[in-house]
Length: 254
Image 1 (cartoon, rainbow, N blue to C red):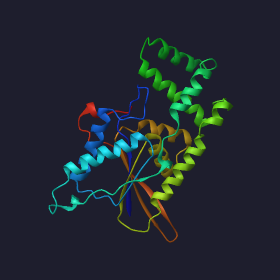
Image 2: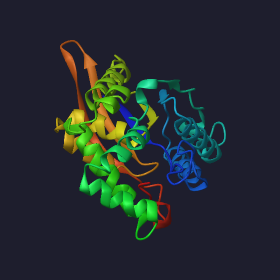
Image 3: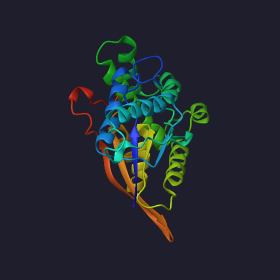
Image 4: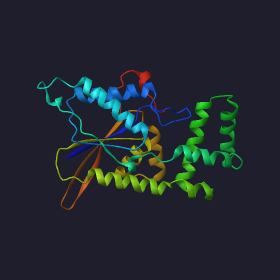
């Protein structure tokens, strides 16, 4: 069987004007993952990454940590380098920030729950971070259910069905290999990890969305797969692992 690690990017700039940028903590998380893989002698045959800046930065920090922890030449199996990742736009996150930016102002006048959380965010009186998280969850649930009720937003933002479709396409592309025993990794986002794992487990749309909320920064999930005559099989070996983040201060969801 072959193995595919789905790596969520390190912590991005959630409360900044530009989210698509790793924080110092996010870069550190990613370097630690690279070092952890190198110390365990993991050799990667193929690598992939999404096209977003945070995916590239996570890969670069991972490669830095991997290179620093790699044994000297001739001292072990991990002294080979890392292949250059293939960039797959299909591994990009769904447009959550665009969805919120377009939907919140309209739904705040129609949906009491959105109005309540938006009031906290605007006034900055109360737990603003919690209010942002709750309004995000509420609106993405409506989006997944097809209950936004905002045709103008739905025309401009990728649908949940389209998002899941492109993740299925990316998964097929990455796992359509005949060689046995390959180890591969893909640097991507939490929604993509949730969608991929949800696809393999056969869970419904809303539970798949909830899976994505659990994916921690710089975590990895492992899939095992086979391809060949008569089709193939993909199985979930692990979900949301962070053995490289042994300090609780390094563990983040956002």
